[in-house]
Image 1: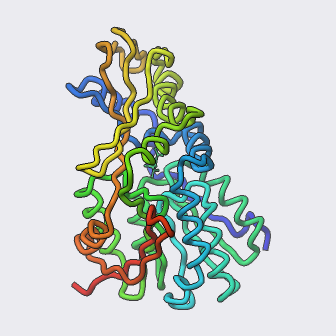
Image 2 (image 1 turned 180 degrees about the vertical axis):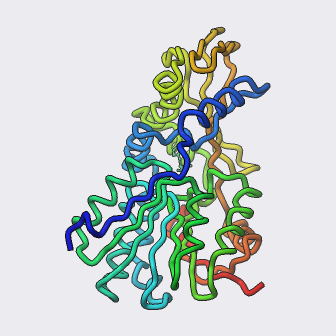
Image 3 (image 1 turned 120 degrees about the horizontal axis):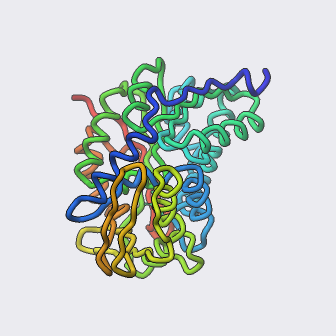
Length: 329
Ligand code: AVI
């Protein structure tokens, strides 16, 4: 069957983009402590920059998770019912997903893949490339945020493996992560499984390099949020007047990303009809990335209504892949 005939692309239900972004920017930049929600980091340019981050030597997460998947995809798949649908939350480029797709296709020759991502451009690009490479694959792609995406997942029939890779859980607070897992769990049948990649606690020096790389790719990724305000909301941010900062709080197990104003400045944003004032060294908080110990991972799984059925680790114990089974209520 032609690749096009095997793709169903479901765009976002509402047109959230501009109005929601403007509301979030107004709320965040006029707050006492300035902040912007990290989901707005991923427009087409942000998604492209994030892919470049994933290819950096310093950003060990992607290659380490890939190595664990390489070793264990067949084992993970062997624990699933035969006709399982593969669902992915925050699929991005879906590069690592190929390892599971191939393991599943080794068993069944036909597979349905349901990626969910907020970036329609990343979704369309990855779907095109996967369909070209795997004739046995059909794709139903949802351009949606997690909440709307999960509502769709809950309507799927038959057994499923839900992927939540890349330590995307780390961008939630620990309480939000437990709440989100409970929502995922609510739509799962006893034989369904959740495969979750989670970055582990480690030395601050390794994390500092991963989140503030010498080539400045992460800095550009972070600054793109201000460039996006310029592009979409008529902002007048001078990017040279802001600096990327990533700090690790070992007690909390949290990397915090900020954009720090280099001088006293006022930045008009046309679509808001308003001007934002910055002190020198004043920060905009853009993202948190929480790291887990194995014990914290067990606690999170239990709080989400899951049991850890299997866990894969790399030799350094930097990253974990966790196969979670829904616990009976
Ligand atoms: C998407 N997320 C898991 C990344 C992380 O590591 O928290 C986002 C990122 N931010 C800076 N580098 C990568």
